[in-house]
Length: 315
Image 1 (cartoon, helix red, strand yellow):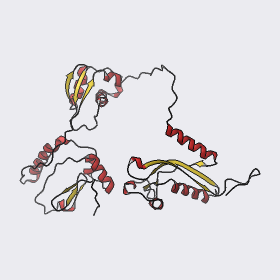
Image 2 (cartoon, helix red, strand yellow):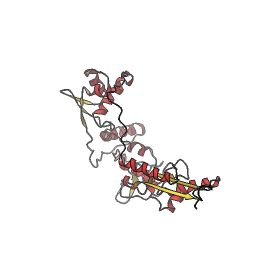
Image 3 (spheres, helix red, strand yellow):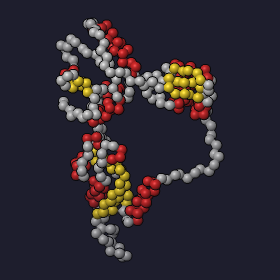
Image 4 (cartoon, helix red, strand yellow):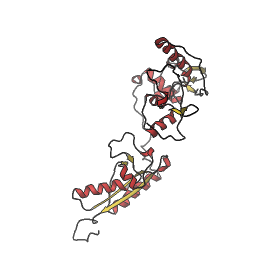
């Protein structure tokens, strides 16, 4: 199968052409057959964000993508290549060549200062200094004592540890969350009213204004059929869902109007000939966060209301 690539995708290539998509899938020419006698073993480290983006753009699922987009241990490339070569020789026989190293292993070393009193402050449980050191050491952290705490060097395979709070969580997790005592919170002051920002105020105002004009708010899906999206400007491939909840809801909406028009049509099919609907929600004009904008749209169908003695309905 052929795929159209862009400059954001990393490929593995020789002097002539691309051999595979880095971290996602190999190409046909780099595959093995029953006649294969020479194998080039690769132990690589690819950027997880680029790998995930490439897989989403091309709608490719693979074991390689599953692992690389979640992050792998960057310090395991050389030991991993040695171990894999050893297993191949033990099981299949053959001869191994010298290792070729291209590029540099990125420095992902991280060190955070863990204050001893933060275990009590954040976790609400007393744990001895010796137990804290034991827990972090068996988890692979290297500790260096300092006044009031430790400098903790994070293992290369722990991508999820990003600050002191994560270190506290590791200690609490191994010590047991069930060992954290239940303590009722003291209420020192009155409960403050919720803060409403400017954006929320504007949305509430828009809803009130439209409701006073006799319109009813509708809430529809943020996706719609691709054919409807094309009628309202279309969307890029990045806004087409890989795993939609329904085959006819496969595209993020570039406008609120298509779903409102569909709702009006369904109302008319069920005998409601006079409808006035509005919706306030996001519409998706591009791939970046700034392209997701909040909008409001409304649709009227039929007359302004049923016939009555006080006024004549308008079309």
